[in-house]
Picture: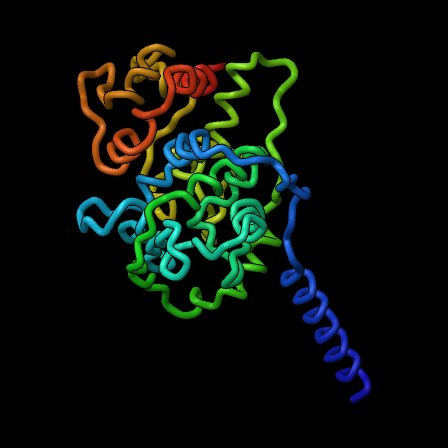
Length: 291
């Protein structure tokens, strides 16, 4: 009996220790939220960050940023929420601190956020970009109709479990430029890993939906991130791209092979990259094609 007592006690201690570790808050560097936001820069970030393509359902015509179409994954169907300035249906009641916490640490007013919202990428954004984006979203036209409810089956609907997921897979940080690379390269890498979150769709994920950072931009076979091609230099060169042609494809959707990109990438181009500056399209093309 004494032996079993010690075995049970040890297992209980291990369980408690694991729970404490997995449920601890996950936070990154403190942001400077005293910066002055700029609506014009923020409106550009709305396009740069893919907010329109994700949070606007053009087919339903429910309104700009009033909630997107459901994203089907093996963990359920996630409906991007209303992020207009409406205080009830949207995020108009959020403070800048709450918005920053969601973008940087994956923690919303309702609790831990699911990683289908790419906070793994947004955490890399600069403090000024976060403040500018918040300022622009608070200036959007409010839409009082909430987005449809996500359909997430048990046990994935237990939001507290996301605390464990974050402790296992999420390391909030800020983008650090490579001092050995050019400004245009670093800008492109910042976009690909940060606000534009190319790696979120174009990288494989493990069985729990976490990005395989070691295979970033090598393509996704499907699953949580959907099916997306490789964006490695070798794959892009094989498809006939150089910096100028890739930047052009991000504007008009036409590929070097005289194809037209449609489906999800078509929406990304139409609602996002086509409205980027030429400099940003060339920057991301420069980074993606770099050896």
